[in-house]
Image (cartoon, rainbow over all chains, first blue to last red; front, side, top):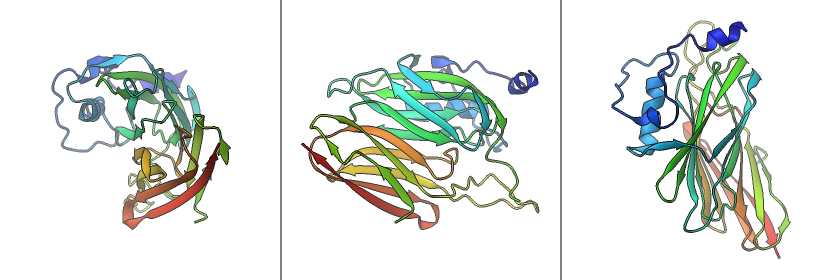
Length: 159
Length: 106
């Protein structure tokens, strides 16, 4: 279980759910080798603004244990209808410890029918993935998943 | 054009929710890797993906270096009328690719 220790070596700033966007976030001037929880929080703030992000509605489908961080299947679905009055406008995926906090932004059309997207992502370390959905009424909902990665991606040497 | 793979149903009933799967061959170089001599390998990624259904945008995505090489994106839409899906990928260093697929809606 030494991987677990490894994944918590960084101070965890209690970013869960809506608490992530409360309060001002200091600007990071030097880019560290890994995104920091503060960078994650500011990336989320760029998307949601001052809105409160509530946990729920969003489902993150991703393997909890990943052998190869270079390609990790990821599916985000939102438990919400797609009607003109009440629909999902966009889905945003963030990570905690890649060099950059953003993974992808997905903007759905009104006729999407099912608010769900799949892609394959890279993970540089064992970390937390957060997905946030924006609804037509302006509310934001989120889900987070912890993933353990045994072979990291992104920053290895090119041979 | 062999760079893109598109998977959509050829036929659908009006009102059916269909899945659209796309794959574009691309290295998606993150810009965070370095060679053995310590030089940074410059970033080369696809930054934007758009899908249009008979001219109207139905899906758009912003991609970042955290998207795996050969970006795979799948999403859903409602089959409303026969016609054409057009896909467009835009990226660093002037990268631009398009693809299209037709659907018959009954």
